[in-house]
Image (tube, rainbow, N blue to C red; front, side, top):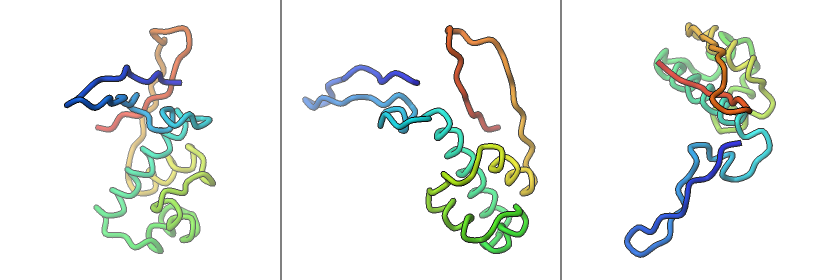
Length: 115
């Protein structure tokens, strides 16, 4: 899990800087996976817009029911695995590259980067 940054004072107001993972900042279980899934959903939504797809057309192309597409674009993606979200991006014409490398710390972490 990612650590929160220290509290800073800005114009007389104490502000706690986020860690870069809102799910970890909220102490949600599986925060790293939620961050990955939300990043994939953002890219799927961008791809749908770029391709000019309706939810129905996107659902057909991605091989999932339209109600799941609707839920996904509204932020409810708990019923979709990371693997399924990656499959959806593949079906929308995107390549996905997974890199594995030794961690700098004893416990590794998941990271999502976009080109």
